[in-house]
Amino acid sequence: MSGAVDAQNGNLHQFKVKTLQGDDFDMASLKGKKVMIVNTASKCGLTPQYEELQKLYDLYKDQNFVIIGFPANNFLSQEPGTAEEIIEFCSINYGVTFPMMEKVSVKGKDIHPLYSWLTEKKSNGVTDAAVQWNFQKFLIDENGNFVKMIPPKQSPLSDEVISWIENR
Image 1 (spheres, rainbow, N blue to C red):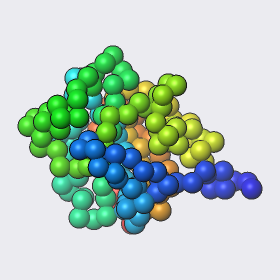
Image 2: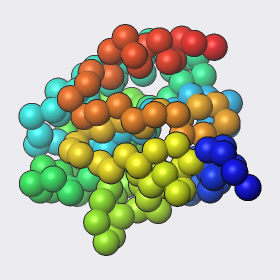
Image 3: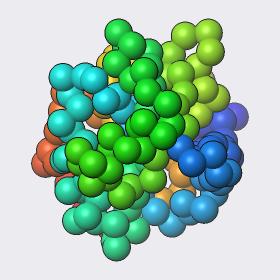
């Protein structure tokens, strides 16, 4: 096997995760949708991106696009909350309606398997993209294939992201 596509070890649709409410969530249910995966935190300088993420979701959720948030406490303990506290924070402060998954580790020895796939070229077939900070975004195409990483400080409403979503 050769080439980037051949090197890809599965895709997003192979993963099963839990929602913040503790329910099972099969990523295969996202077949046919473009997906943005983002690691979130409630006590970060970038936390206001929740507002931009929600705006992006509202704009494109009916056009086969979804955002999946993964709270993570990997950076300066900026997501210390319980699932209930995170749900309340996101709802009250930002009106978040896009799917939020259980808190996971996005780096280190206890990295979640989904984040291993997202961050390692040997798995995703595209690039190494270690999570640098909270609100790093990963773009996944309709077939569950890794497309690219968007750095934490880049707005979810950037031209790059909007162009990718709208490029049918």
